[in-house]
Structure formats: C-alpha cells, structure tokens
Length: 279
Image (tube, rainbow, N blue to C red; front, top):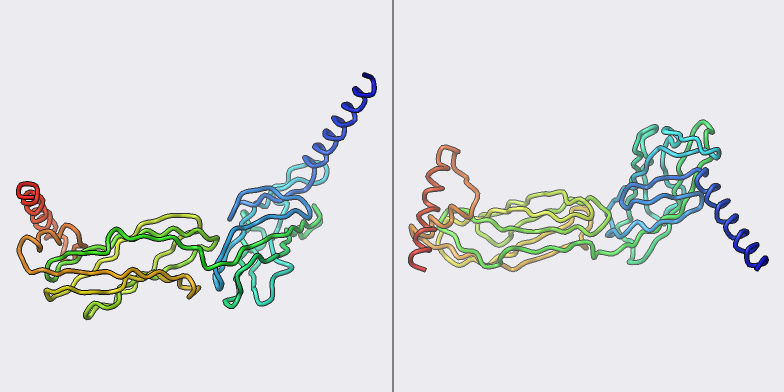
C-alpha cells in the first residue's frame, strides 16, 4: 500500500512540475491558418495549398518569459529560416501585432508534404527566439465549386445570372477568375477573392442580343495556379417573346438606369402571376 501511494505521489509531482514548467515557458500563439499554441521545437500542420499559391502564417506577439511574466511585445517578427527549394517568403513587419508572414510555393512543386522551419524573433533579448517545424501539403485539390444550373433561359438582350459557389479548402486567400467563353461578343472575366477555408456565392451575368440556343463554357480559374481549374458546359436558350423578356428581367442584373427598376419589378410580377395561373 505504501509503495502504491509513493508511486502515485511521484507521478503527480512529475505531472505538476511539468505543468508549471510549461505554464511559465515561452510560447507562440498561432492564429491562422489554424489556431494553436507552440513551444520551442514544436510542430504544426498548416493544411494544403496549390503549386504557385501563397499563404500566410499569423501569430500573436504576446508570450511569457521563463518566469511566467506576460510580455505583450514578446515577439518582434516572424520569419522563415528554412524552406523547400525554390519557395520564397516575406517576414512579418517588425513590431506588428498580430504578426503576419507570407510564404509562396514554387509553381513547379510536386504533390506532397513539405517541411519548413519558422522562427519567432525578439530583438532585445527579453526572451530567446523560438523555432518550430511547419508542414504544408501541396496539392491542386483546393477548390470545391458548384453552379445553380447549366441550362439557362433568357429573353433577347436580357441578362440572366449564373450563380456560382466557390469553396476554397486551401490555406491561400486566392483570387479566382470566373468567365464565360463561347457566347457571341462576350468576354467579361470577373476576379473574386476567395478567402481560405470559406464558402461564398457569386453572381455572373450573361446575355445575348439574338434569339437562339447557345452552348458555352463557364470557367473558374485560380489566378495564381493554373492547376486549379473548373469548367461547366452550359446551354443558354434565348427566346424572343414578351413573357420570356419579363422572366429574364427577374433573373438578370439590371443594366438600365435605376429609374427603370420599378418597371422591371412590375414585369417580373406579371411573369410570376402568369406562371402561377397557367402552369
């Protein structure tokens, strides 16, 4: 019984001592792309990114010294001290809080997990510099997307919207270019910023001035990585009739002056009532 008590006491004392040492130790609080706290020589997985894309590591400048005293200005900058061949980085601006550094992946990077060594620096010796190992998974599989419909109907000269949802599953706040190719006299690329780990919906208007059936491609492209690309074959049926013109005004973007908006709303109401009664 005495030996069992002594064993439990030693285990408890060891755990308590370890906790006190860690609680008073210098640390680094990572805020983005994931949230965690690191100690000297710790490690972290940052997620995934496509070849050619850039990502940021954001961390707080607050830490404690070895005596447990909180230092709000404990870290002065965050920088990379070891990167995969061809990768580049920009350290965080000095004395910024939070600290935000940037790393760019070489465009030719093959799929795989890559190690890096990052360092939090204190210029004046208040605390020792802290280094940690970071890992990034390089893959073009960082985009999930969808469109509301691939079969569109509009009146002559009346716009209709393509509703596209972009889910950026990577660690890069990447600009994406959405566009429609194959429509007559139409080339209107639109750039949007899809923040990492977010899902957003965007509207892209198309219209044609002549009746007919038009096949075209709707595309979503990363502005920084050509490997991140989606294509949706679409069909736009343009019909010349008063009812379809009314319907198109409710689906599309109003291109006329604001003074005509009540007229468009009334036209859409007529279309809705007609379909409600006769459908």
